[in-house]
Amino acid sequence: MNGLSSAVTDMRLTIDRLGARGDGIADTPDGPVYVPYALPGETVSVGLPAPDPVEGRAARSSHGRVEARANLIAIDTPSPDRRAPDCALFTRCGGCSAQHMAEPTYRDWKRDSVVTALSRARLDIDIGPLVDAHGSGRRRVTFHARRKDGVDAVGFMAARSHNLISIDHCPVLDPALDRAPQVALDVARLLLPKGKPLDVQITATSGGLDVDVRGYGQAGEGIRRTLTQAAERLDLARLSIHGDRIVERRAPSVPMGKGHVVLPAGGFLQATTLGEDTLARLVLEACVEAPRRIRRVADLFAGCGPFALRLTEIAEVHAVESAAPALAALDRAFRATPGLRRITTETRDLFRRPLLPSELKTYDAVVFDPPRAGAEAQAHELARSTVPLVIAVSCDAGTFARDTKILIDGGYTPIRITPVDQFRYSAHVETVGVFFRPGIKRSSRV
Image 1: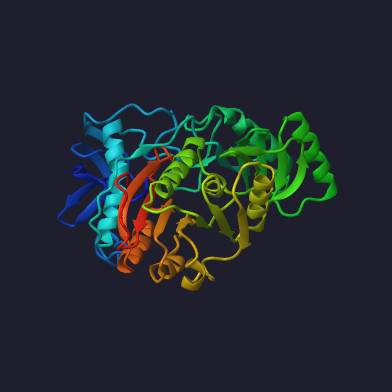
Image 2 (image 1 turned 45 degrees about the vertical axis):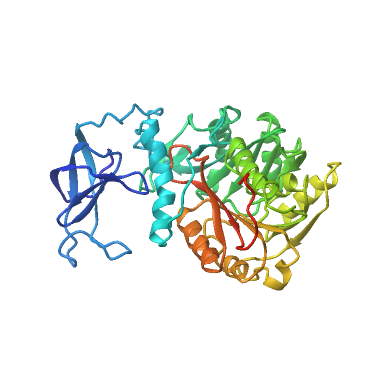
């Protein structure tokens, strides 16, 4: 296991519960001790960091509680809920935190992260069971690329460290990304001589691998020619630097509903195909099962259209997003797909300029799916609106709870909260919340 401090005290602890990041937590008289990769009921030997010289004991958390993070030395009494990890790099690589949990424990832990976040916001709401949306695995991945002592390497960062762990295979990736680590290394070797650390994002698309490199800076004509030749040799769909397309040999498209979206270079895409399908299904079901017909929908933080291109099969959609390339990709897909209702688009920063109640009043439903920071400003405006149906999609339990409380305090009633797991073995969980305005008759189907 990774050492966390050079000055430690060895001790034995009994783990009482799991934390939000997957750490085992031992409740001691001096406060909780967090032990990575430990499970409730286990007795473990740990190295405890030396007391903080100012506090006189372990450091305080952002909540003011005394906490300590220990280094797991040995599992003295293992839990029956422990399983063998799928990856030999587990506990070294920082990408996964929960490969040691048996399935029931893992599912309960993931769901409880949403329950706990809502409880901290003083909300007592029924939560549905966790929906598995891993499918065939993650279809996009970002590798870090570094040159050290003349050796080039790509991989992920070690747990709680800036040390690079070389990767040649990752079991949580879609099989379409099997050759992605080698592709990332081959591309990085052409650029690392400049001396800068790089990030190489690779996405599996219908046209093949789509590669975008970050950290290099502006590419001159010489390196552009070199990269174009590399894209041919590696049979890439597209290769870009900071979203600047170097070469596109085939359209890097992905299906969305009845449409096919050619992704913006380096743009956002849901982590798994099944994850996108599941989130979209929950959104669409909420609209179809609404007590009155949904004719107009506002899709906020719309991206390149995972919800809009499906919702437009039943309603007109106004898609709002700050990234113009994403909206352009959505618009092209919409225009190329027959049989859909109208989609309009608007480039707008919803953090600074959320839609106001006067703008929202013409919509029967609003869907919002913001980045991890949540949609606080937009939630406040929705709370002041008369929109009958609001569907919140979130990749962060904490900001989902905050935004949910804003909606409830503004008069909305939560109908269904569903946690969705498309980030297997990580602490991340997606959540879909369905909210109605009071006084609207509920459908028995919801």
